[in-house]
Image 1: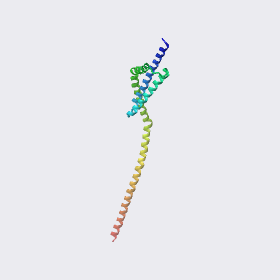
Image 2: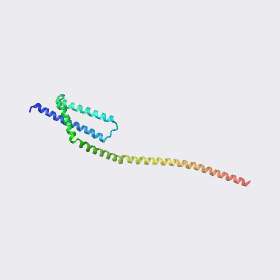
Image 3: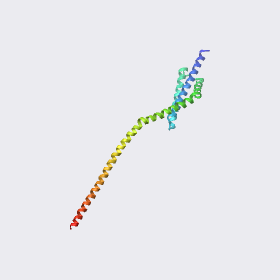
Image 4: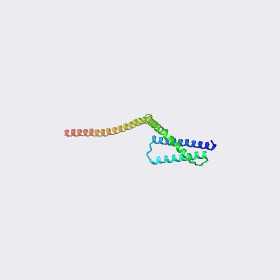
Length: 172
C-alpha cells in the first residue's frame, strides 16, 4: 500500500477518534445538565453555543495539525462516524449511570452539609433568639410589674387616704 493511502487511513482514524472525544465532551455537558438544573433557556443556549464553538475549533485544529488545514470530506465524515459510533454504543449507559451517581453524591453532600454545618448553626441561632426573647420577656415583665406596682401603690395610697378621711369624719 502506498504511503499516501496509509497516511489518509491514519488521518481517518484520528478524525474518528476525535469524533468520539467530542461526543464524550457532549455527554459531559448532558450529565452536567442533568445534575445542575437550569432554570433559564438562555443559559442552555449559551452552553450549546460555547460547546459548538469549542468543537469547531477542535476540528479545525485537528485538520490543521494533521492535514495542513486542508478540509477533506472524508475527514468530516470520519468526525461524524466517530461521534455516531460512540453515541449508539455506550453513550446512553454512561450518561444514565454517571448522572445518577452524581445526583446521589450531590444529595448526600447536601445532607452531610445539613448535619455538619446547617443544623448546628440553626441550634445556635435558635438558642440566641431564645435568649433574646427571654430578655425581651423579662423586660416586658418588669415593665408590667412596674406598672402594676405603680397601680397597687396608688390603690394603697387611695385606701390610706380614705382611711384617714373616714377617721376624720368619725371623729367629727
